[in-house]
Length: 356
Image (tube, rainbow, N blue to C red):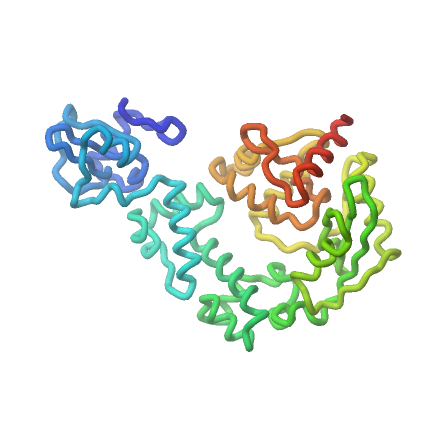
């Protein structure tokens, strides 16, 4: 077979590609191109042009491969404008983020990248782990949260973020997404009480912050000033106070985990996250001490094998280090990957868990 990107094209035989071409199946657009030897033209599988004889057709992974073999793009279906799945999803995400004040239907998004609405929905959800609509809502909530602090009113922030009604805001941003009502968030957390303490730990200074509902943040760093600045950045106007006594039991539990003295930290949490983030974090908490899993393995555990990048983002946004053990996640090639509190601390945590 003349196609080739074994990772993506593994399941595509010549027969599958030919059948997709005969049926003009747009679901295969972006997965391969069809090159006709007699005309030296290549097309996308869904091209409406008259179909050639089978023996005149070869299949290639993408436009670059077909053009390297001496074929030129069809002017009717413009196959070179159809990206591969990962590239397509990246384009859709960037388009969504740049056009949040516009209608973002599947038809609009599909037209932007040359995919049918059905195919876009299926591919996007498989790659990202959520639907395009959910991504739109999440992006609008992110913009809304950022604009709340600068806007003159919640209504101004709502329209700035691309919502067209207050009900749309609350549908996309339930109370758990902010942890407080919108007006309070816009005021930088004014009226919210959050206590914290900072102590020494085997991995540097340790900050534990909590609301009345549970632990809201666990951070590691080299200085108290850096840790305090990190805490204050999200809620500059909240009533944040230091309490070195009240949080002692919670701090002791985190320190025991850092020291390898107990198998599991079971603390009440007050952290906000999407449903997908919680799913990832629950998988992390099930990883045995001293063991690691790759981003790809976690994605497969969730039943979404192509969502490794989304898993990595869920790990990167984990606000409670150690309690949710994102240090147990590594790259698919075995490399350490990233860690918000430094790779040295990540390696040290793993070494302690393994008894090294």
